[in-house]
Length: 335
Image (cartoon, rainbow, N blue to C red; front, side, top):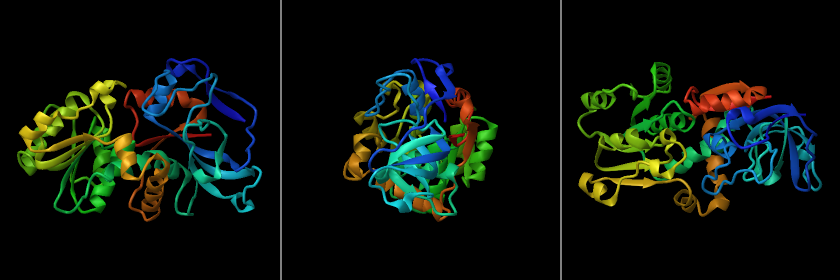
């Protein structure tokens, strides 16, 4: 088969498209003929040899990156129900990567059968990025009374949060970088889409909705942009931080407010990734429930993830585009 392998930690150019032996499924495993492989911002950090939270960089190189795949089961390991053979599935591979390939191996406990209405590229956007969005939403009880602000609203997570908030009847403001991304946010159904590369983006929100209109701020950008958005929170509002994409991979870039700042503004501000999210679902071992929620909402037509496709052979280009914020929605590799 063909796969993308990382031979040395460092820049995207260290990802090489090459021929490698076909993997064989072990006991309790299946092999998936991959139709779509998800690319996550975390992948770019692991490529550089960094550890992010519980996710370690590869212990041995060369290694095949990627933890999100969707495709058709084409081989079974010992003890696997024959009914899996030929089924379309999606899987999050967990701590064992191998997704940037034409064939990938996964345990049956990780498989999600795909309904006919759900394409492989949409499914792969939901099994990882979708579960994170569902986890973030465990900290919010959205209703038509809410005004929601989503930063990076044209990204993989942000686009799903916009759609879900609209589904719940909330008023939705989506902020994104550049005219093309703003148009995407409008197409997703936001009541107002603003370009946060312009200096007047916050003023545009105030002009339309008032001085401090936001009841929920969904924010994974961090840095000065994330902190400036907290000034739009209404008294009693909630800032849910899930990253710091604008500041590299240093946790110091997260925009969570201090306890004193929270008291002054009368708001709550917290980081929801990692342990807080796991605790909401009863531990990391239960995180599959978030994958199931995302899949169910997609099957019902509530979530339709925007997808930015790259050929598998161009994985390095996909990484560069993701790192420079030149992508829309979920980045997906297609063998």
